[in-house]
Structure formats: structure tokens, C-alpha cells
Length: 257
Image (cartoon, rainbow, N blue to C red; front, side, top):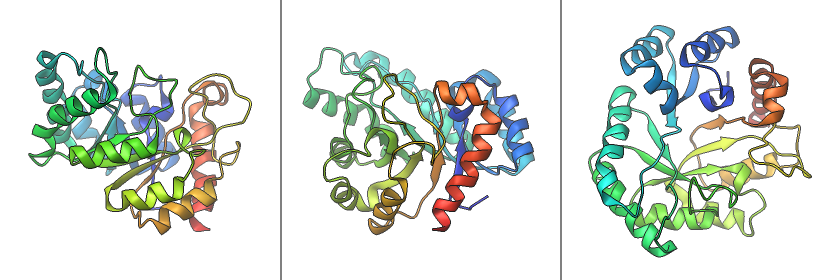
């Protein structure tokens, strides 16, 4: 597998951690992104032992959940979950902001910064990702440009979810502006005409200009991981193992180019 390529546990959405471990072994995957949801279900001691036994590199942890930004009393419990996850495997935490609740956008940004500061200020590696405007339940940061602004104000990194920003105006300029804050990239594809979300597909099966975007990331100085995060009905219909195998081959060709 290409050293900069990783496979997210989100790509096998309904599988358990144990099933993921077995599948990664069959596919020869040695660089993975973990799901906090799956890890907590399995137990962190089990996860750490399995990661070590299989010699896996962990690029990041996702599916971290969120707390109510407009209710500070909920913050400590979520911080504890994130701290435990980071301490277990020492990997980048890729987070979404959670919904704004009763807050305005600017108030939400201030609240997120206050929530994340005790983690980011104490050695925990965190990146916030951009999300689709159809998923305001996950985040109020729905453009990459706003995500970069929030990350800068909060002192954390940026995770570029390509599926949610590929058609944005000035994408290349935004990536250049992000520069050293670029901490992670989630790769997948999407077919024009789909009316549901998420409905991702294997790179090369859809209409996202991935080669151009990879070139823009390279020009922006990004030197980190490209993680396959495949989720939606097309992936479910094909089957996780088959879709991931095709995605690895397609993305390796893109990276080689």
C-alpha cells in the first residue's frame, strides 16, 4: 500500500472493530483510521493490543461525536472521551464541531474554541473537518474556507473532506491559505445526480476532479495522509471489502501520477 494512503474504519460502517481488523489483514492494509464509536464498543485495551499485534499505523481517529456547544456543562465529558482516545493510540483526532444549538455562527465558533482549548493546549493533536451543508447536525462549518478560519482561531489543524468542498469557489487559494494547518485529507468520489447524503463512491467512479485537487494539495505543501472514507448506499451495495480494494488500487494510481 502507498505509504501516504490510509483506510478509514468508516469505510466499513456497519462492521465491528474485530471485523475491520480481519478485513484489513486480508487486504494487506497496514495504515488505518479508527472509529471512536467502534473502539469504545470493543474496549481500548482490545484495540491497542490488536493494533500492536497487527503492526498497524493509525493515521487518525474519527466518529468522535460532539457535545452541546450551547451547554458548557456537557463539555468535560466529551473532552475526557477525546483525551482517552488520544492517550490510547496517540493519533490525530478528526472532529466536527457539532450543531450550533441556540448560538449564532460566531458564538458557536467562540464556544468551539473554548471547548477545544484545554485539549489543543495540552498536547492533543486535533483537526476539524468541513462538512456538507446538509449535515448541520454534525457541524456548522460547511465550507473549507470557514473551516480554515475556525481552525486558525482555535489553534488546531484542518481536515479536508474532499467530498464536501470540491466544488467550492477558490478552493486552490483556500488550500494555500491553510498551508501548514493542513493535517489530514479524506478522499472519496461522488456522482453528479445523486440526491442523498452520504452517497460516496470509489475514486474514479464519480465526477470529482481528484487529480486536480491532489495537485492543489501538493502545491499547498500538504505532505500528510490521504485517507479513504467511503460511506453510503453504493458502498453498501458493492460490499466493503470489494469497494475498499478497488479504492486502494485507484488511489494508488492517482498518487503515483
